[in-house]
Amino acid sequence: MGRIFAADIGGTNARFARFSCENGRLAPETVWRTGSKSLRDAADVLSAMRGMPGAGPTAGDALAVALAGPVEGLRGSLTNGSLRMDLNGMASRLGWRGCVLLNDFAAEAHATLTDVGARARRIFGPESSSQRGTRAVFGAGTGLGAASLHWFGHDDVPLPVRQGGQGSWHAVPSEVGHAPFPFQGEEEQRYANSLVPALGRDWASVEDVLCGRGLERLHAFLTGRRMEAAEVSREALGDETPTLRWYARFLGRFCRIWICTTLCTGGLWIAGGIAASNPLCVSCQEFFGELTAGSVLQEMIERVPIRLASTTDSGLWGAARVALQRFFTPARDGAEFS
Image 1 (cartoon, rainbow, N blue to C red):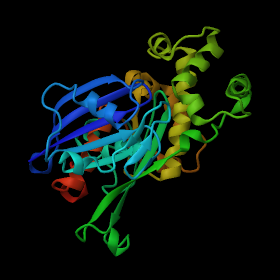
Image 2: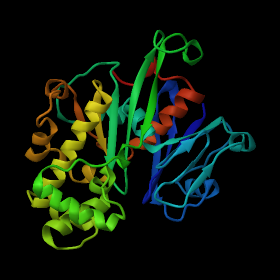
Image 3: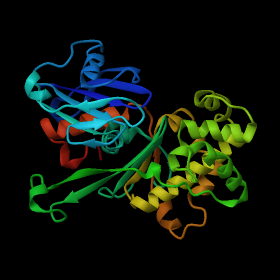
């Protein structure tokens, strides 16, 4: 059986992996990382992928690329970068089994059904959840992405969409990162008033607040010190600092909004570099206090398991899972773990 070569490309980092897919299950053989700033087109991505240890793609293999930006068919572009992808005709030219291109958080959503989704650390809510309930995911890093994953059974969708008369999971990407962020109270409004002039508009988005640049601005507002996001993370997010408390409160508020928006009774997964590197952001009292604060849906929110992704490679697993379903043996009953 062939292999799956997966890529997960964001505004800063590009991750690559090679998976074997014996008996309808994914097994990573190697994972490799590089910067994404130098990537301009599909040829650059393939060249970087061939830099992985071991043999590159050959006839019978499949390619799956997750891209942090809008995707339509086999074309897509990187929102925070110059990369433009076009995979049309590539599989037939190179003798591959097939190619798939998807939004990076659509890949993150599919990753919740893989082994890495099962291993994600539960930080809130019950141990188990609705087996076919909607799943949601979001993550903040260079930018902010979010998606949801919905199960459609044989009675839920029109006949042409059905798969084998059983059902399947479908990812729904989102641009909620570009929605206005809801600041509350006088203190937060002072921060908002200091934030928006630099944005060139009179409001701040969710991404403006929660991504790396937002973390930099928040820390500067609270301390007067301008630092890169990585420095802020090392200095201020590993302890009970004002920056941690504010950022955790903002994260908890967005989690509440995203749970209520998606009705993700199957669980919420938090991905992205900031939370993964600084778990105190989603395990301190400010986060939990804001998660259910004043919500009429508090009981529903408390029934949603919230998990923190245990690896930054989950997008690779999600992209590979889509290729596995599409070009190899379909995943068992729509899921890879129970």
